[in-house]
Length: 186
Figure 1 (spheres, rainbow, N blue to C red):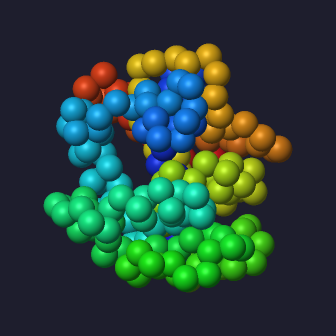
Figure 2: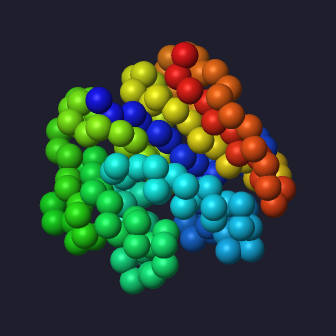
Figure 3: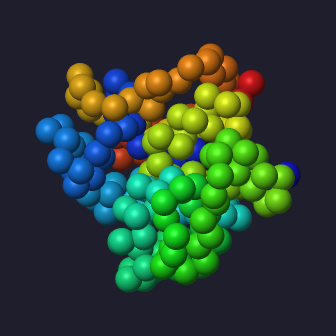
């Protein structure tokens, strides 16, 4: 049985929108340069090394798929080599290596994937899908890299959650001014 792990960068006030500044959000780009924060790079690599597969919504897949296939290094090699699953009703021919489209209703498709994959299934950069999985009790763990900035506006991780998400704190680390919080489903 697989374990869904949602790994996201968030601000102090819970904003997840446009961390890289490439989406046009007026407060976007709040992450800065990841390369300037070795602790963030180490956490991303640890997430990738611990995963058996990566899960994306279509938008997250297109964002990461446009950037990582041409990169090299340990993190790029791991991301490019892992099986990737994309929840989408519109994507037909994924072109990033080892990618499979999961058609149908997202909750059903991810539930089936969770039964078929042993180990961690890492969801990154797909906020709408993350919210859906949290809302339907399919998220087993949240790994949040909390950046020391509050924006006062922007899409938040828990926007549009229709039910209570009960989690328990399972780990706290820090480095480079970032708090790394791990929560497990209760």
